[in-house]
Image (cartoon, rainbow, N blue to C red; front, side, top):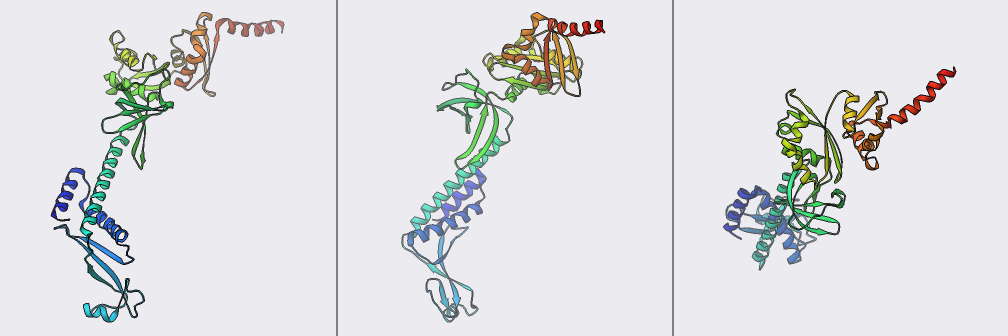
Amino acid sequence: MNIDLIEALDQIEKEKGINKETLIEAIEAAITSAYKRNFGTAQNVKITIDRETGEVKVYSLKTVVEKVENELLEISLEEAKLKDRNFEIGDFVEELVRPKNFGRIAAQTAKQVVVQRIREAERSIIYDLYADRVDEIITGIVQRKEKSNVFVDLGKAEAILVSSEQMAGENYNYGDRIKLYIVEVKKTTKGPQIIVSRTHPGLVKRLFELEVPEIFDGVVELRSISREAGSRTKIAVYSHNEEVDPVGACVGHKGSRVQQIVNELKGEKIDIIKWSEDPEEYIASALSPAQVLLVEADQETKSAKVVVDDYQLSLAIGKEGQNARLAAKLTGWRIDIKSKSQTDLLIEPEEEDLEIL
């Protein structure tokens, strides 16, 4: 090794941001191990690399003792003083060693260490880049499928879309460009593992931020969201400016904004409602598209009784209870829905009892 090594390390420090001194220390430690492994020695050795010239020197280290029992590890005080009078018992004497073919071993080891450290640094940079983007949206290109997992190229890294984060009925074909939500970034021995999702409610939230400038600017706020991926999503929005209609801003001219998001989500239905601090008004809106006749909210139990016309009952409940379920999740209230006729039947016996009394 020579000055070329030092120049290479200077370049790596500049381009990769890896500290030159850290690299040299790592190379010295690796060469020490390589020396012992290749030369089968039990000696204590010290490897030094000249920071200016790149020259590598090998020293055997021997402890100064009164009586030598192991010549590989010890040196007598008398012999040590022939080298330097100041040596005392317990000191270490360094002796320069010139093993044959060592230059080749040292150069090969140095290269392996540098390559490894560069790889580690690049992995660390990628980890930091994507760890800072957790809870954000990103665009990727489908690369391959392995079992039930889909691997997506993000440009500088590869993300994994596990089966539980895939939308039901959605196909992922090679070359497809899709938007994804970054759920988690893990450090592994093979580099950062980036977990992404197509089902997370955060994906819908970020898509609205991209499509609706009023949300991005903070004029309109997305207060709550409930989602059953691939089927239906409900969002509640609020405007900090009385002159801005939050629902209209999200829908866009002739539905252009929300349609962009629906297209990205492969036809998933999206209900946009206006958030209200009045729970009865909020719950009634949350059950959209059903028309609600009456809401009785109990603040203590966080439960509400809702009355709708008979012909609106199935719409309010939704297929397999989906509409009511999403409304409950959106508002945070337990919702009990009855038709007008069911409510009347409940009331009639009570009125008869009163007449008897």
